[in-house]
Image (cartoon, rainbow, N blue to C red; front, side, top):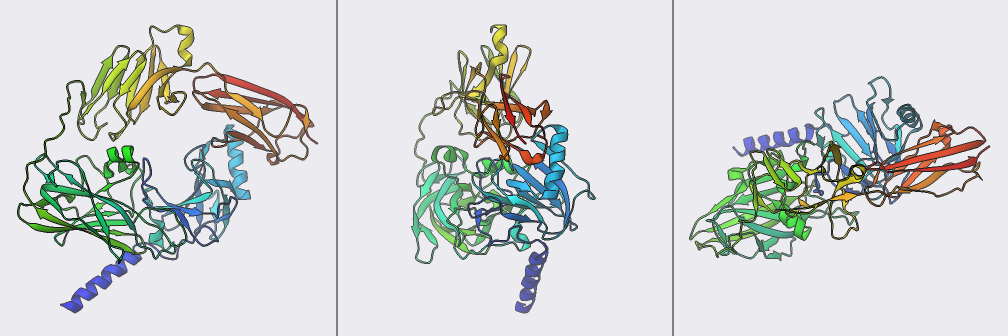
Length: 562
């Protein structure tokens, strides 16, 4: 029997190792991999879809194709992955390289031709399998800091043939990591009104007791009824101080597995439901992410495995139980948390009375429309995860729509009736979100149809009608009017708009469109003379910048080159 069990375990291990090809994909950089972000890491509104590989705080490192294949997609955008390259490989997987500074000479020429053809910096193209073949170890790009990157690094992904990202470490791309994950907090949650934790019927933070071996005990708690738990945790690799995400979390009740969360693969369609995995209300108030080790209704995440009773445990009166949490990183380092539980029936402490008479109910399973004065808010089915009582108040042009502490699955729509506004002002109005620490309301994507202004958003909060009549600013950075630029490689201007924000820009020289790369972080527009578009001695530069409500500024200057 023991021999049979051993053979079974060996076969399972062999299958797990061979499920994904090993030594097929190489490290895309030729430096020791050090990570600033791990796969599945919890971000503000999504799970991280790849590895963020550090580039020694520099840009311009050579980026290599991880394997032979062909370029199947190139996307350049101001935000997100910035300059991104996608390579599809013969084995069906696709590798993704994001936040690039620039592409290799061959690929750069290809994409610039597309940009000039479409007269747009932002482009997305899908070359066929014969256009841009790629060899193993070929230099395809140089690392950068484009898009939504907070510092120089390479974002690297491996996706399957259904466009689902997988942990690249499954394919043998690893980092040095001998450190156990850290646990910052453990929390207990009653499932219903009849359940108690230390006499309470609300979330309770438990006292962690670190042990010498790196594990943790929790001070014994008394409980009764159906209970769930949550944990805040992070991992740290050997060569970096970053607090990264963990790879796997399991829970056990009296030795039996209760739930497993495995950050191995997910789909982009489900990543928004991170708001259902974490305690969203706690995150918004404390800026700390508690991962709930129980599954609430309307949670479609595929990360869960072996969920018995959705991860909740049943604690009976006059019993002694042990709840255990195992947190692991990809390298197998693990940390255990032991939670002793005394089953003890108690009447819950009386909850603080909440007056719901002035609140409005938004339903999960049906559409809800809220309306007061000239403001109407539309919630479609499944916008909220649960039926929710929210604050809904209107004061003149300001909409008070609860606090941002309730997770939402999809956008709701705010509508302003502008019938009573003067027609000459209509095209300068927008809907903005009010933050206490910002001078002006922040622009929310707004469209007008007739006398109705509509904005869509996925966040509760305070919104107002705002007006922008101020044109964007355009300021030359490295040149002046009538200046000789023969020895210059780049032409730079800074653009800005304080109210509604930059929407688009267009630059021409002698009437011909020129490519100018826009970095919203530095507010710079930059043209590379190596594009070889500017060939005349005397050149008339014209730049038009438009904000989100249509205000435009025009900058004109003459420069010379030879």
